[in-house]
Image (cartoon, rainbow, N blue to C red; front, side, top):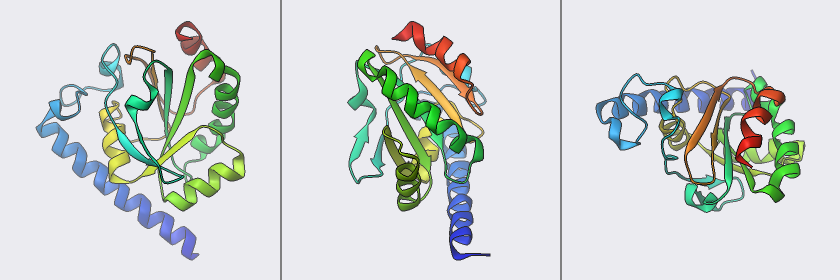
Length: 184
């Protein structure tokens, strides 16, 4: 096994453990994230305010949810080791580019190593904001309704900061556009 593969497995294992521990902690205090009662899934977040977050970007900046106030926000949780995540990223980048003038912001939140996520996004030519972390990303994903910590996971937030749609699994362009267009 190569050193890179081994490191990726270690990062995934640590992140998964952090997610489980965070999930247990949040189930004790469901109001900590505003995500709802224990056991509620992604749909429970629909119609509720966007959960707050502040995460590190792949370029070293700190980015907060408030930085996207007034925009339609598409949040996509992903990882370099997730094949469906990698497959949908070029489509998300194209949608970001074609709809940025209409107020769309796409944010990819990677459960990964910063250098690996940055290199991967650069290799694909991804122009949207990439945030990266481990335990903090798992906690953010959980706050956004991803109780099982599965990837990819996508959340669509309207200009007023209200969660309008959630999707677990690889995105289909037509389904995403049907949800996105009314918000733009």
